[in-house]
Image (cartoon, one colour):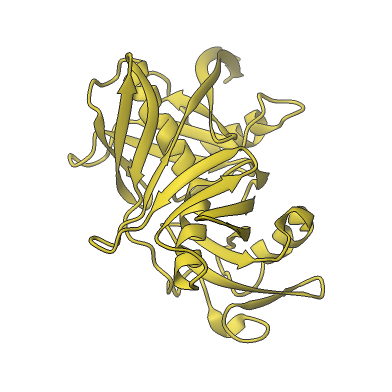
Length: 285
């Protein structure tokens, strides 16, 4: 049996933490299994999942990003992770660009880096246009009480489906702090209306464009924040008349700014990204 060592970096965006590996330097033949083992907060490194930074398949992007949830499933997109990738590639000297095109499973996203004193202070990500009707991800006919109304353990949740490249169901409640996110989120994630499972956001409008949101992520469970979930929450709030097209989404791990201008119908997400620590792990082969 041989061994090899892989260096990794732990980062978070608004508390949404992932393990990042530069695959330009290290080969990751089985990221699904690695994500399960490494994400374990008791026996592993501890994270919401694993992110691989690499070369793009096409010539239209600068870098690629692949995301694996804590259960080993591969995600389409993660807004918080994309901001962390922007900070990583700039501050680790992989690029000097402050406008980066990032290839993801849900398309190429443009990252705009705000650099202060050689450090990335914040990142704005063009998350492209939201979609509210994605037949492969959402089947309204399978809702319990008509489109947008689901039952979870006897409780009715009325919500809005929004795809940001990955599926989200946003439900507005009167008191988001009292919601048992683990109980209801796990049930709603696997509801038959979502053939590919779904991310669930419980939200409450608190005034002045501020929306308090708690997240149950598909494949990871409760997370401190979700970038695409923040985008979906802002879009759902605007579509239902609860807020305008600019919102501050307050999640357990921090605040994310969302703008959805009518000019191009793209959703723009702005927030920070932070390094936590670097480390190395030895694999048996």
